[in-house]
Length: 288
Length: 288
DNA sequence: CGTCCACTTGAAACCTATCAACTATGGTGG
DNA sequence: CCACCATAGTTGATAGGTTTCAAGTGGACG
Image (cartoon, rainbow over all chains, first blue to last red):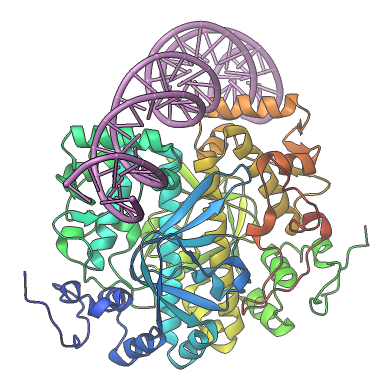
């Protein structure tokens, strides 16, 4: 509710309310996340801003950095939704990551020759293409940037593992619910969700390729969720009515999103708003 | 079929047959993998050896580095099997990674305060506990070690994403088959599998927690696989009869294991034995 | 020789997939 | 403005894969 801050925030504090959340850094949500969740200083943030300074506009349903490109670049999503996916030999598709503003589409290109996973946009997207060599140079001069990249990689790892748990051990209803909770939290961090409401630019078929079900079944599951009053749909927006009960129903604990932040060396800094905070703030571990 | 080499291999070649495969480096399979898949020089390898020089012996079914420890250490599995897992609120368990000799159990501790995923042994294990500070010091002096750690992290991501695809889009039979193929390849790299045969020290219930099924259904699936002559059981050993047809049935392509290796900067070095090599060597992409 | 644990088997219930319409929505062009 | 079209969402009936529960088998080990 505070007025948005336009001036560059001086430096993230070790605790307290975040102003960066209300200041999406003029469309540079990666900077928002770094200010929010790391202790990078102004000089380091500025280096990142420079690296991101050549944005490209992409159409919806477009491939980002196809496999053949050789992956000498990183693609940073500045605006819009995208996803990483894998096609199986029988033609089915598994979406392994939903990419939101502030996400790096192909972090593995830093270390791998190429990934066999593809990336495509869902909506019109703004993407910064960053030469890997430039990133490496920046890390040499500012080693903490390397730590932050490592942290982002570990974060992806945690998200993949959590989705594994969803795919393997949660029911359709729990999984859908879990996905909505995760999206709400991640979007809130970059200022794309407010008051439990956000735009969901995915078809039910795309959702089904995330959670490993059929679009028909996703449809029925969403209907059930709506029927129980947990979720509402307003046009293309999803409105989450009762987050606490949804969290409980899904067994959703945001810990794996590591909102406690990182100081680049594995030590936590807490800068997260209470409404998104990990479990001790809102107990939700009672019996499912 | 070449005679095992005892002397330290001079340095990995850019191509050709690997001798390290026959030389499991005196029980230090991580060194084997690094020799096999990276271009670290003798000095760097020696630094790693020093870091791993304090092994600990652990009982089966023991927790490795429980959550409360604060994660100031990395745990490197030198011998035995372990797994990373997650307990859900309803008591069910999802195993998110099977850890084999040469794997790092908790790489995320480098960047995260702590993971909410636990690690436990399956068999008696030998584990090296490495202070994270020592690792960081080593990286400062030998930056390529940092690249290799990043590569190992990206590799874990790729394996998790592949399992996502299995959990979401493959049938029980395909998934079990895929798991067996993956284990065979990974074990072969560290000299724990020969001629399509390896010891599988997991109960069917543990397998079921990997692939998100019931132990009963895993049982029936394995029986079907045995009945079709694809797989055989000899005591605690699994014998894979027809790898090519299994690969095809599972849609298994070893590319995601990145056996093409890494030179620490995203460029590939090919040192992999042909029997394990990626798809161009053994076409297996015909219709499932 | 008894016990424990893992593995095995069967029958029934349940969840999810499949297939095939049908409806709603938004965009386009006449 | 309306007819038309393509796409996404919705619904129903049926088939099939997987779970559940319960019981029984088998081998390893003290």
